Amino acid sequence: MSSAPATVLEIKNLSIEFPTRRGKLLAVDSISFSIAPGEVLGVVGESGAGKSVTGAAVIGLLDPPGRISGGEIRLEGQRIDNLSHDEMLRVRGRRIGAIFQDPLTSLNPLYTVGGQLVETIRTHLDVGAGEARERALGLLREVGIPAPEARIDHYPHQFSGGMRQRVVIALALCAEPRLIIADEPTTALDVSIQAQIIQLLKKLAREHGTAVMLITHDMGVIAETADRVAVMYAGRVAEIGPVREVVRDARHPYTVGLMGSIPKIRIASAKMHAPLVQIEGAMPRLNAIPPGCAFHPRCGKSFDRCKAERPEPRAVGSNLAACWLYE
Image 1 (cartoon, one colour):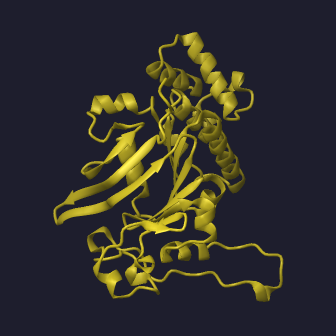
Image 2: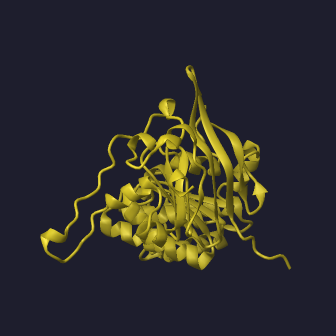
Image 3: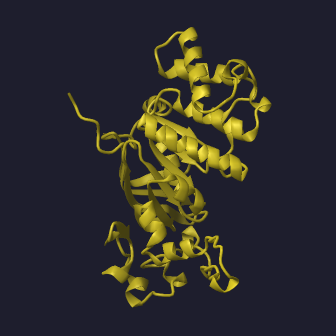
């Protein structure tokens, strides 16, 4: 009897480039990480850090002319970055599910949610129409849609934003995928609905053993949801580690700045309230990434080596940090 794989997703030295008239723009620059069964890995960073592009590469939905220019992506040991379009179609939906920011882009307004669920189930699994409908009802029930027997024949516009996102999660789970890519799944929702969707994702990862790659710019969502977190900056991984360690004891100066920018609620006198940290400057454009550590122009701790040599992630306690401070 074969044992379950130690990792569901493994990314090794992945690079993604966008050819332009002025040359090639490197959107993702040789990043590596893995996700275990039942684990939620949060991928966080500013807009343009390379988070969503990495997720799109895993699903096989990179927008042209973007392309993978180096490295590899493995799903349960099988390399998938070099599959043909038709081969990737069979992997997407069946073994990899996707949840996007706006549920309306994932749902067809002309079909009932039940029709869309049944079609997806029958596309990937060898079941009849009756069994597929029962499975769809079970999924709607699992993701917390009230009165699923009545709601299954409703159209997407008859659901609220939060309920539509639950339907999208049910769609992502139709074929019992091993991996779910969730790209900003709570951004368009009210804070109270965000918390419900976060709890739902955690529950599904735990009960189904599904690996989840949660892409977001919201460190609060990461702290609530993820087991580990990868902090990206200018197409590179600045720091990766258990979420508690990264939140409590960040090592990379960029991560320290991100943590310092999160408001902390304290019931104490105003004198005890430390001001929020602000990271000066802005992340570089893809055509102007500086040599060495990409963060050095904004870093208060940089020295000569930071400006000349690129640091690779190295072990610092239980975290990996790409920083020369720990050489």
